[in-house]
Length: 473
Image (cartoon, rainbow, N blue to C red; front, side):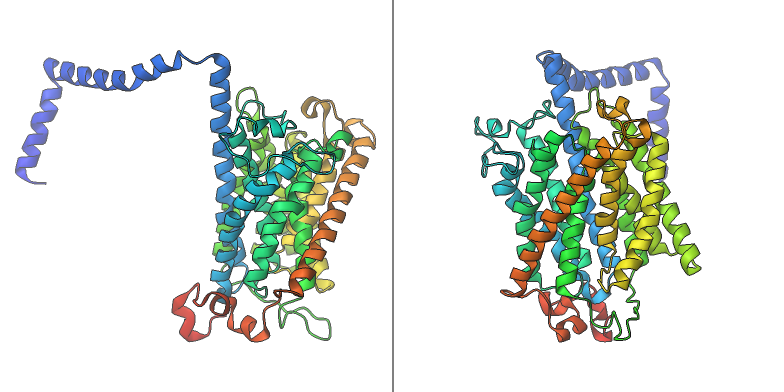
């Protein structure tokens, strides 16, 4: 610092130590604060308390939806890390298209099917709604929940959930699926298959009438995505070299555990919006309690999966531990608002153990799932759905009691019916969809394309260009 700067600084500091200097500073700060605060206060006086409540609720729901939207970065990193570097760009492209196609198809037909006026099976009104259309909101009369937020806010929060369900399949079918076929799948799932399940449960459909409970989507999002992944992975077939003719399983390692774990942490962070944001309100809603159950279940899932892999394989598998955290999150998604903290720990522990053995099982029956999506989302999603019927307490669930809260088997039976119905619907429709794609535009990449990597065969460039000259793994 020059002598001139030092002298100027010392003069300014000494000035502030004088009474006139301090008075001048306080006057300037007061004027600035007044210019910022007074107009806000004057404007706020025009709002009623109800209008302020709705404004706060909308800010919370939009912020929570933004967290869910950011989860796509987590999915991208998890899937990229658990697969080989020669397919990195393809993974990124699919995740970008999940969001882009999902946004448009859900606006055109998905949201109306899910929440429009119709019947117990699907909605039949509000197609391609306009936010300026005064009649658009009336098409969604079943949205009596979240009455504090407007139609645009509801749509935004729901569309990011639809895109999340679609992206679950990306990892399960990674490294051997034609990009064009995947785009068709993403459009159909977000436009029709997912919204029908959503209508049954969240849109006033037949499962909602039965009293089925799924607070944030163990069934609607995760079971749907997991069963779609099972159908897709089964039909597209295993990657070349994954299974020997003798039946042995060959490990095809992903190229970056750091990327995968970073993705898990981002997903964990985004889940605060996923679960807590499903209150669809901030004022009067104890969303912090939901964050407590969400965190506890995730931590328990990670520890359980790490311990299980350690016992079964002799080493604490890092990738399996990450999937255990995700399993805990998936498991608590349905019951997060309905159970006490101790139950969240139990739910997460069971989810973490279940995901490890589920991964082993699907490998044994030769269903190739590079990232474990079928197990994390499908199998554990079913567990989370049933957990509501086991652990729900009346004080948190609007009077519904699970088996361990003295409610008997009634709610558990309802949860089982809803889960079975979802598995049947998604399994049947996705099987038809993937078979149709297979026999028309093509689902499976050629062997040479798979061996070279989908980055170059599908997109014409590498995700890691510096590896092009060294035959990326």
